[in-house]
Image (cartoon, rainbow, N blue to C red; front, side, top):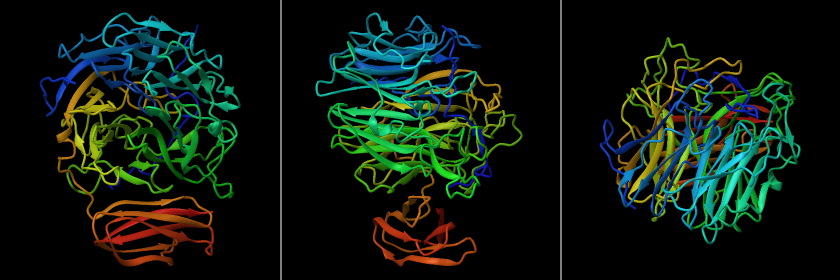
Length: 605
C-alpha cells in the first residue's frame, strides 16, 4: 500500500445533512478513434455541472437489446445552472452510431441525479429529482432511443415538504418489467440546519416498486423495517446502491457513521433480509449530539469506516458482490459535522457467500514510478493536493458481469506523480476483473493513459459483452466546481465542466496491463470486527504456499498473543484473535511473510 503524508489529515463535512445539493423554491459496440488512449471512445455529451454524485454512482448506462442508453446531469450554462437536467444519448446497434450530443435536458424543469432503466417490453425510464417542485420526476417512452418523453411527478409524491432526492432505479422481475426505486427523504433544512424527520429519521431511505413498467407503483416510499429508526438515526445522500437480477434484489448502504448494510430480497421486493457486513461501533450515530467515542472515556476516537461510495452486483447464482471505498472518520466536536480522512486509500470487496468480516482490499493507488510512495504536487491553492470528492484516494466503484460470470469493476483512483497545473493530482478510472467469483482480481487497466487529464464518475453497464461499456466525465482539472469545505469555501478553485465520454474496453484487454503488483504472495489481509470487545478475527488470503508469522503486540511492542508461525498453504485462512484477558486499548496485529511486515491497528474496548 502506498503511504501518503496526508493520510492522517481529517476534514470536517456534514454528509448526514445535504451533500452538495441545493434546494430552490417553488450487440454492435460503438467504435471511434481511440486517441489518446488505446480504446474506442466517443464524446456523447458535455456538462458545466460537473458533480455527478456525492458518493455512489447512479445507474447511468444500460447495454440492452437494441443499443446503449446513457444519462448524466447536464447543464449548458454555469452559475446557478438554471438549465440543469438530464442529458441523454443513445447508441443504435442498427445504425452503428450515437445520436447528436444534446444541448437541452429532457425535462421541462430543473432536475438532477438521473438514473436509467430499460424494461423487457422495450420501455425506457429515467428518474431524477426536481429541485423546483421537490418531486421525483419519472420520464418514460415506449421504445429505447426513439420517441417523445413523457414526464410525470405524481407517481412518487414526496414524503416531506422538502422532497425526496438522489434517486436510483433498476429494472427486473420475472417478466423484466418491474422497476425498483431508491430515494432519500431530504434530511436537513439548508438554512436552519435543523433535521427534517420522516418516520423518526433524518434522511430515511425509501423503497418504491412498480410491477407494470412504471404505469403505477404498488410500493411507494416504504422504509424497510430493518433500516428504520429502531436501528439508524438516518442516512446521507448517495451513500447507497441497488442491483437486481430477476426476482433477486439487493440494496447496499454505507456511510461514514453507518457501517455497511446489505438488504436482500428473493421475491422481487416483497420481503427483505438484512446482513450487517461491517458494524459501526456507535449505534444510531447523530453528529449533533455525539462524538466518536467508542470506549466511553469522553475522548473522540478515529474509526475506520467506508466513504459512502458503494456498489453491488447479484450474479446468476444469487451471490451478492459488494464494493466500497475505505476511509476513517473522527468527530471530536458535537454539532460541527463529521471529519473524514481523504488521504486514506483502498477499495474493499466482500460477497455474501463469505463469513462476515472476510473482506478483501482489492485496489489501491498504482505506484507508477515504483518508489513505494504516493507522490503528490505541492504549492497548489486547493484544500488537498488532489481533487476533492468526499471519498478516499480509491473509490467510486461500479460493477458489471459477462455471460461467463466474470466480474468487472471500474473505480477511480488518484494518479501517482500527476499534476493538473494547479497543484492537484488527477484521478483516473481503472478496470479490474475476477474470473473466480471474487477470490482474486487482475491488475488494474487505466482506461485513459494521459497524466494531464482527469477521468471520474465512471459507470459501467451491468451487461458486459465483447466490451466493458464505460461512461465517465473527463476534464483537465482535479476535483469539481461544486466541492466545498464545511465553511462553504471551494476546495478545488478554478474548476469547470467537462465532457461525458463513452469508452468501449474489449474484455480481453482488462487485466493484461503489468502494473506494480503486491510484493508478496499476500492478496488480502483484514481484521474484523474492529473495534471489538473480547475477540476478533484475522483473515488472510495467499497466492501460494508461504511461511508466515502473525502475532499481536501492544503499544510498547510487547507480544501479547501469537497467532501462527508456520508454512501455510495457498487460499483463505481465518485466525481467532482472543484478547479477553488483556486490558482495553490499542494493539497491533502484525503479519510477516517474505521479509515483509503488514500491521493492522485494532482497538479493544
